[in-house]
Length: 293
Image (cartoon, rainbow, N blue to C red):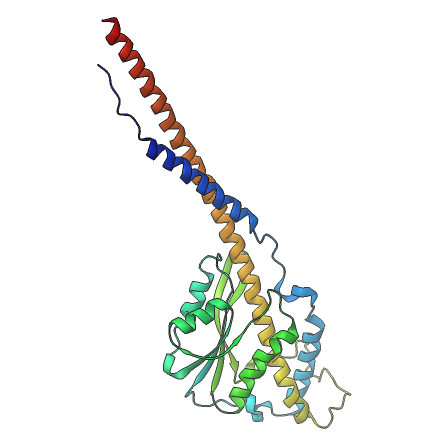
């Protein structure tokens, strides 16, 4: 007599539930695609190009009229304590972006490092690892230049007060849609080689004919903090672009995986249903044969 082991209804229902769960994952992934990645320099409608170009011209001109190495923001000191600005995301679902970023932040020696954090993930990491948190700044998804200025101002004040001897920034550098790299960049002291250079072939002063009042040294003292604020602003926009790009790729991968998962579960469900129907038919045929005998 031919007999087949009946399929458990619980196992059958479990397969159907897993299929519904996968479809839910696919819907959530579609609802958060982050499909449009804007250039980090043009978030919130701001166009820093003209501002940066003019600022660079002024700094190039000031370098030719003064010795910028005498400014306190350019003086290199022995590093006894370092201040690290960590720019992370507020939300997850961005793949390994925050994991790679916080791995870089953890490389600093905890006993000699203070932290400024931008983003909830960085704040949670600093709190969890019991490191020294000096400041926590909350920003919108597309912050403006004015909103990011307090970060640079706070770091500059700590450096000028000699509470820290070096300021570094840990952020995610946007390379392209599928490639974002965690980066550590020194903010203070400003190295002389990092200041803007005259891009023209001529060695002439780009602002020849202009007179700086009250003097070139005084203008340099005002310009360098603005240069730092602009650097912080660009890093934050870079990190925001990296976040949206990483989340878009993560949601795309989640959607593709959900599609394949649904396909596999549907095939398994149909096989189980067909096997159950075949079992019932065999049981009926076997019973008929037994009654006929």
